Length: 68
View 1 (cartoon, rainbow, N blue to C red):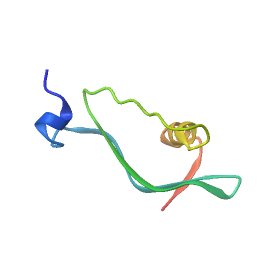
View 2 (view 1 turned 45 degrees about the vertical axis):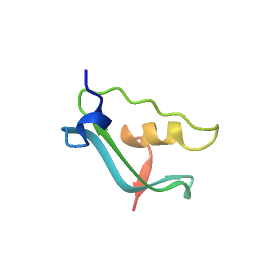
View 3 (view 1 turned 90 degrees about the vertical axis):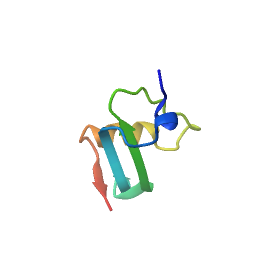
């Protein structure tokens, strides 16, 4: 199987964020991130505690206010 990096980033996009900011209690907790998840791939999201991983997933589900 060819990984997305080996075939380039030209596969179909399943989910994409461009310059996304996420707000909780009127405070920006994630600022201006851009991410692209390709269809048919598995993506891991890891970082230190308190960096916005759960906020990103909540925003993708429409549970948090987002802005640019």
